[in-house]
Amino acid sequence: MSHRVNTVSRRVILGAAAAALGLPAQAFAQRRLKPTPSCDDGDDPTPPQTAGPFFKPRSPQRTSLIEPGMAGTRLVLSGTVTTRSCRPVPRVLIDLWQANARGIYDNAGYRLRGHQFTDADGRFRFETIVPGSYDGRTRHLHLRAQAANRRILTTQLYFPGEPLNRRDGLFNPALLMQTRNAGEQIEATYNIVLAMR
Ligand SMILES: [Fe+2]
Image 1: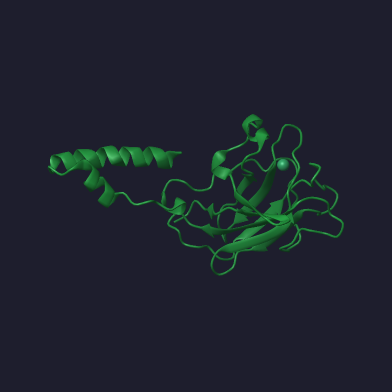
Image 2: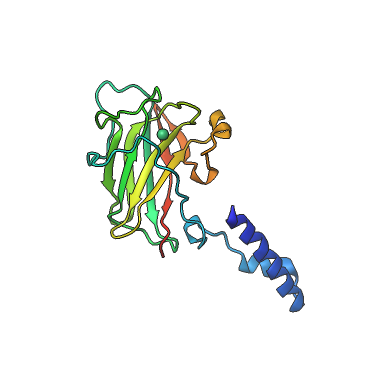
């Protein structure tokens, strides 16, 4: 959101600068205003959200959370972890936990819980299923991201086009994944921006 505000205010300032120099405002603005990648906004790290009651430490290290007989639409979640200045961050611990297709968490064991580390280019990739909604919560994934010696980012990711998004008080559009149907499965991407340079 603040990105949009910044763009507008920058445009106003550039317009004034152009007028002072006797230049057409639009030409001046077009030369100076480039599209900004999200990790380069300077003020927009991935927003944190509550862990909720279902986090469990010591999840297994794995890239696939799918187990034999598990019901649900297959979901592949991938993304990159970067700093606010767009540097990829390797060896970030990404811990993912979620409800099953019926909206139920496994609190006794570790079904649909797992962690991995980002690769040398800051990338991660999980194979899992689409979680069900529950108790007024729209569909979401929980995750924690921890770079070495940094504070843990705890947040949640959301699915676009879900009717319950509008009624879930925790929903934040900044945490929407990009999703696309790929045959039998859904491919989702989300790039995490840590609050570090
Ligand atoms: Fe949850």
